[in-house]
Length: 526
Ligand SMILES: [Ca+2]
Image (cartoon, rainbow, N blue to C red):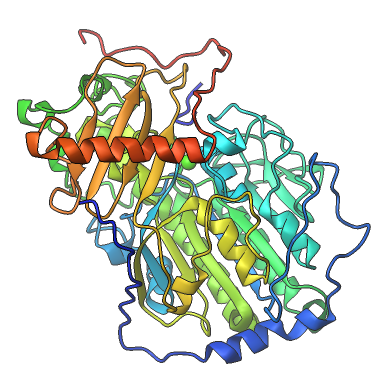
């Protein structure tokens, strides 16, 4: 089995939008265009909505006068926040489509997950809730039946919903989810080449590369939806969920070896030096020699350089696929009333602190790329610095579709930020990860991050906690947990973490049955 998936500022942040020169489109014009079909739609298509999936039946509450644009949410897997051409890292990586989305849309520069792990994050995206609330706390958990996925609310107000790609939550089933009218998926992690797909309940063996196959399905769907007859019917919501760039990375044939000879800039904190580990928890140094460590990567299956290069090469087809989706929207004219999001389900460490992969709360793991693109709604080259999270996706997409945020969601809509409207916004984000028996090297962590500080406290382990001055120490090199002048702050942040957990029903640690597989070997001699 090879898997890796398995200062506190008390003042309210003001909205800071830094727009470069670019023509501001008329928002009213956009909404008018997007809302053309709204009046013709029934509020609820009675009898056509499958509710049997959930115990609780909850109804969408509409926002009067709102439009119903088409919405495409593109999700990738394990794509870290800074590996995009326009971010300049790594220097050799070109991502023209992501660059275009950021240039013509809005880049949310400070986007985070609440849990950096595939299934918990995917469930948080779909429910708008923290992991401890929706119950998917690891990659093996089933989705508790009383959760409502936000596409169900879209169905209720007349959207057609389509899911394409990697589902990967709970079981190994690829059966169609009932919140989606159209379903194209595969079991578990799937494969990069020649996947067995489940198309609306029927299995189809496909030849080719998964990123390209999913792109083709998405483009075909967009073209189908662009016909005059289709546009009169229903707006659509497409959830395009790529397998890329999850390990083990396999680039498209056309990109294999493209970065064979590039120079890799290793992060400063990757070196195994006394200085780098002087004030780090012991588990971090120990992890160097384990499954998620640079010195024993996936228990010795790969060398770091090859791993790094393949990761970058695998991003290339993903970027091309995003480009094809944007082109299809432009060619069909649907770009005028379609909002496109791009995001990853979690980040990915590539050598920082001697670690690879995710789970832990360092920046590269908890930060994600997030871009919104909608010519007509969003001013080009908008940069949003507020702290946003995966739990905000559902409220944001629902508001776009004219639906109020359901009361049980923890996230909030960042649509006002996209529109450049003033908003009182959160000044901190919380984080949680629960220890997994199969991957025993990363402890349970609860934490909080502001624009200034990051605090992490670990459970069930005899080790030190961590505090970083993120503003002055963005690479998290100097742990301030023992600094005398920070002790009051540490106490305050600790209390805030527990206040958050108490307020949201998170004062328990989930216990899971053993699955009798563990990535627990250490590099010989360590
Ligand atoms: Ca992931």
